[in-house]
Image (tube, rainbow, N blue to C red):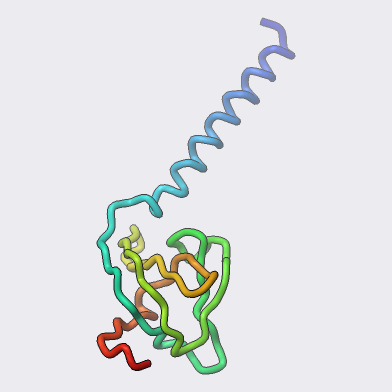
Length: 112
């Protein structure tokens, strides 16, 4: 094996390692969680702020939207991450994604 072939092999192996690592990075969204299927309200967010909606259940994940304080959202399910915080998959109109559960309060009275 010459130097060029060796470099190509190493580059290919690095690509495989990166691909495998990225597949594991998105795994929390598929992790076993608990079903909620309930209406909730965004709470604990300052009046001047918004609750960020994320692509995956992690604070460092890509932001896909935001909700104003007091907005009602549908909570599909939640997961507990390694950091210990619960993240919930929520939906409202055309905005869907993950939010930190500490900013949600389940609503039992549907007159919001």
